Length: 205
Image (tube, rainbow, N blue to C red; front, top):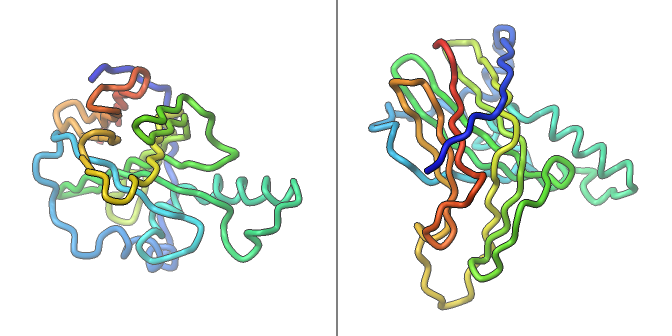
């Protein structure tokens, strides 16, 4: 996959309070093992952030400000359908575990935060450019990197009875331990999509 380096700004957050840890950390660290072969390309996982759940608390916290901005934008245009929950927000993530830290790459898909890149109807695929963040958890501290925009894959359900090839159209990520670089990529019909392959250096550990 090709490589381009998006601009990113690291911002050191203060120590996490005990109350915050009781909500967020269990969702991330429960029954986790060290990641074998972090450099291998793996499909990204997805989370629905409209409703607060223990399983999605980590990702919702990474995007708390953006989710609130999206909620306000819906209300500002008179859309009150989501008064009891978040406005539509989905997230794609990739998590790497080492002996000392966890690295979470996360891309947030909202109507107000993303722009359309392309639609490939034959593959049931819509690609958006959405904000990317990387959160690095070490002990009771988290460092968050703003990674610019990245490709977010929306894949419509296959028709009933149609064969499904999970590797045909998929968003991938990997972590290069030697260079401390997170890599992303996206393939549609087994072909890499131009502009969706990124190398994101994490800098010093």
